[in-house]
Image (cartoon, rainbow, N blue to C red; front, side, top):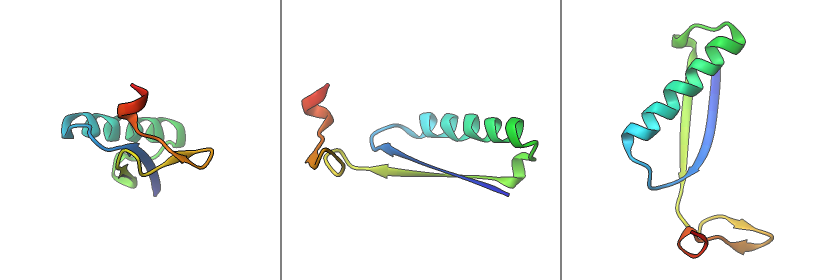
Length: 64
């Protein structure tokens, strides 16, 4: 079994997250010769401003 964990900034719709999960699954299946049923994808979402760079919070609204 393979577990893929990815962290993204919240705000993307369900369709986009489903597409991401499917593409990550495809990559694992192709690379590891695994069956799709053996792949788990976990998407963690972080709120804007709840992460930082160089000790300072990052807000997408301020950085485009």
